[in-house]
Image (tube, rainbow, N blue to C red; front, side, top):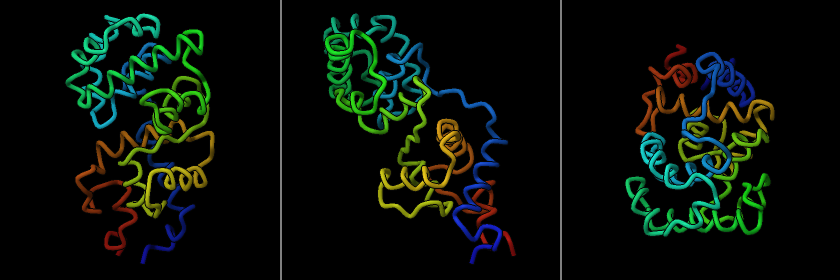
Length: 216
């Protein structure tokens, strides 16, 4: 059994929030971008790809076109050539071209600042829309990827079966004002201390405190 100190989700959430805030007082966005549009494109490229690789690709892409208007005039095959290292390049190239055209035609060249309109864009799901809403527009959101979903389960914050349910659980546990920074802190922590390959429960600064063997 867990020590009484961490017997509830609320107590574990409070501890997680405190540790992550101490470790990562600053929360820079890991994807290089200049504005809402370049962030949106970078997030689309990051699907099943590392942020590091995306950041290696976007300088050439944005030198070619860094606005919806310019991108909508670039041939899809040329976009695909540039973004090929990110994987899934045919789908991503079509999505970038399509969303750029729609932004120009329906939104006056500006990235829409609502979940509903963002999620109507090609290649933009709820997680991508959440990233753009919170990081480009400052709207409280809690983007949950597969690793945040994994961490929430490891830490006993959620037993949800999918990222959508995990998002709801985390939103219920943490104050809305902390969501935008907290999801980034969880990303940083997962990369540095509690990786996708696994955690033995002893060296991770959070898992070690929730591991009853370490408390005995």
